[in-house]
Length: 406
Ligand code: NDP
Image (cartoon, rainbow, N blue to C red; front, side):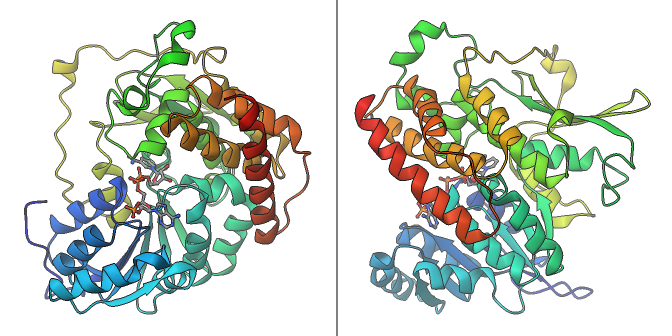
């Protein structure tokens, strides 16, 4: 970040108050970067982290936040001390109550939901309950609780603006909106592009031996560790398929995945009249973040401009479901509905953590997810408590099965 953020509004418009859930992560930091490039337009109200108290304190001091929250209560004192050292007067909270307070802070219009994993669900839901404009990066909220979550959004007059680059691209390729339904605006298909990750062309027999460092080194995107591994297994694309189903109220058979190794076309919408609308850009999360922040206006994002002549060729191919079984498992979970996406996501979170800790091989991630899905019977999800219960159950089953496949 290189420019100093202004916290007061411009003379013509008051600054828009924004809270960032997960501000110390990759998306959170990029959001603060975009904010700092647009002085006077935004005011940072609350920032949250899991355990990274020092980094959080520095962000709070720099952006003059009024509330700092660490999810881990054991880090509250460290946060308090770090803020004091920096002469920052932000209030300090921790745990679930702190996250809920940050997400629902009165006087705040906009919440960037960028906590990673299922842990993001409750705070994001709180933002929906309090009628916020939610800039949604935490795809897991929609994956595991799509029906309940979208119901809460509608009931409370909240709004979701997609930040995930593919969903943001689809949103941009729906210029007529989709409030009346995809059918009404003539959408035939939603086509999610996938880079294919770092192992797109690696022979299957070598996948067992890849290291966490190799899996986290994405060819085009700079992201947090969990989503980087998900990109390498194509589970990320699978989660995005389910996310798209809820975000755009799409039928499962309307969603397709197309591998596009250059990550320039971020996704496409195919219409009844034969038109295909795509959104293009350099692979930099600051573009979709800036788009969601300023929509329906456009603001400076600090990204490198796209030079198609320099790029030369853009290529596309079908995904390889055999080499990347996680993608097929996600389609299966979407079609099954009920608790299946919760089970898929929970098993995947356990598997990715075990892979990052070098307890299981890369090829075992899909094995574990598959086994857990087979071992937890499908049931309906009616409310958030059902989601939390199924999430707990699937994690317990995953932790048992993992012992067998070490
Ligand atoms: P990171 O791992 O980089 O950051 C995660 C953030 O969440 C950090 O602030 C972290 O705090 C916080 N956090 C982690 N665990 C918890 C918890 N249990 N409770 C509360 N806060 C927690 O993730 P990313 O920024 O990569 O991803 C965030 C979300 O955005 C994910 O859902 C991902 O799928 C999605 N996304 C990310 C993209 C990217 O380019 N990175 C692109 C599109 C979507 P701490 O620093 O203390 O650990």
